[in-house]
Length: 206
Image 1 (cartoon, rainbow, N blue to C red):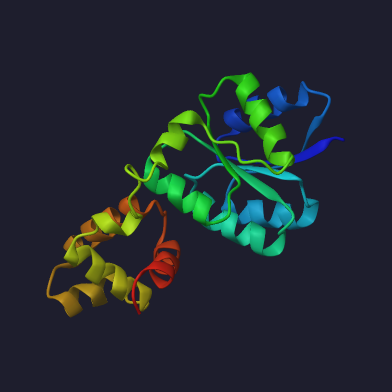
Image 2 (image 1 turned 30 degrees about the vertical axis):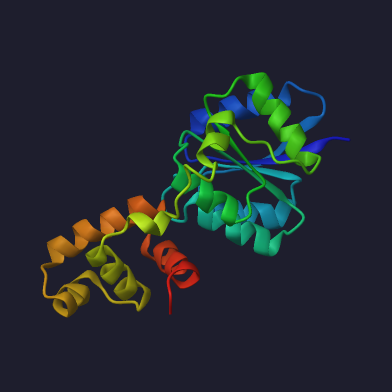
């Protein structure tokens, strides 16, 4: 049986290299590519691939949010995160969003192909470096590292306030709000206010 694959990465050279590697095997077939999260969702709905190889760090909708949206529309598709990141926060977010596996871009080519096949069979391929981040002793919730002020900013982001409005609400400058917002995004592993708000709604006490 041939496994159909959608490649999602915002770097053309990465997409080309990955497609060339995958197409060199008779049992794996790249049926489409996408350069960002929004396009990934559209292409997944259109193509209904067996596997989506999903990058995490992309402009606009990041890979975590794209994973959620793809699975909401295509529950039969299996998503394997393929990225250069291996910090535990991103691992946790990706897997909680529904990804079935997590591989790194610097993996051995044979290991990568093996991971794709494993995912197609319903298994959970995890790079050993990723698996170590999931150990109970090592894993922390992404929000645990937020300061009190960062949590306040995140709560107001969830309410739809702009940076200027948040500044007025907290009695700080708009520039300071931008700094806190950047810290929040990095700690949660998200790329935009929408993804941060969705994380907060799912993880913070209401």
